[in-house]
Length: 117
Image (cartoon, rainbow, N blue to C red; front, side):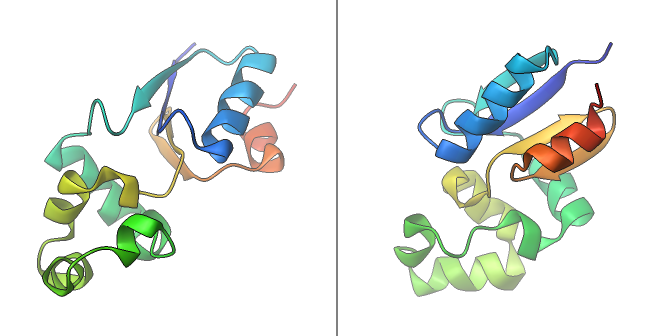
């Protein structure tokens, strides 16, 4: 069985709910703290290409609201990956990688669809 990788920050309620669900359903997983182990440029770039900026970037976050205009310009066009590397908490959480798939956020229904029974 493949191990899921869940990216997030430990104090995020949604990440805690997702981790709890995975544990309760005996889904093998590894947790990666986005602040401590920021994903590589290549990984974030792949996430953006696969998911799109609207799905991956949390524009409602405090971090986003505190960005400079220059950083927001880069995020919206020129180099969003650089801004996400510098401010990994702009990434919506959790990001779950499993079996070649990506899921952002958490709902029990969606996880149940991925790991029935």
